[in-house]
Length: 343
Image 1 (cartoon, one colour):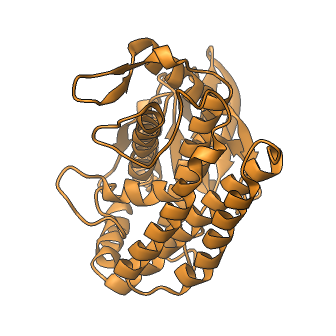
Image 2: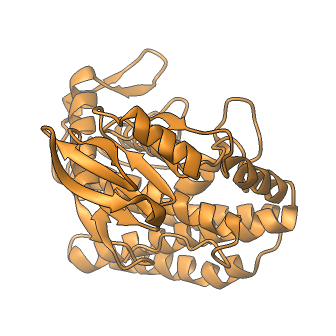
């Protein structure tokens, strides 16, 4: 359990939440292990199947405290709402800003700034740790190109211009992605991004990782009361969770791309874990998918220090913290949305 931004995160799968007076009590095996005053909380996010008592649900609804339930792996299940809830005000603000091109770009550019910053540091990490095994000059050139784009992104006022700069950055980043693959290059190579379908093993892994990250971001947004389908950079489209795609942009390089590189470079998957269909599409086998998912969940349990909050937390909590920061900005508690800047 961890309290961040007036939000209680219950990450233990066997914790049952109950109400004792004006306190929420965390119970394990019918024994109280922690308690938190309700008046200090704005939201509770539980990743436990054990659930919560009806009394606590009622108290949260009455006091306007968000109570969201997710699976232990992070998939959003449900949210408790009373007769009066701040979520409607939060979502109305989200919709108004999404309809305002200038305001939308102000938020979106911070997310893309985070994406290019994190892509650059992913390159720099490889250049630092494996200088003798890679084309250091090519990596340095791509890093400088991404660094050059950052001040331009910070001043953009139109989303079309922002998309153009993001495209330039993505071309520079993926242009050296193959250099960051260090093992079994004959089987795991990258010649450019392709999808729907993926035509090689690396693109198959990237697409799968992006899909998992997108689901995590959508769950995080729904848990804090935002509408995952109304974005600021990605336009509205039926069935597309546009805000989740916005939120995941800054997290792609550090959560998805680096994970894929780790899986390949640490030989956690074999070429035999993939199958090629008659159409040319490359997919993970059932065994390969299980191995990937197991490693993904283990990665989400690793800890780091959040660069904005200065708090130590698990990687899997990052989408939820960023969703909370975005909600706080929309409510007016923060002057700007602080992107996740990986260090």
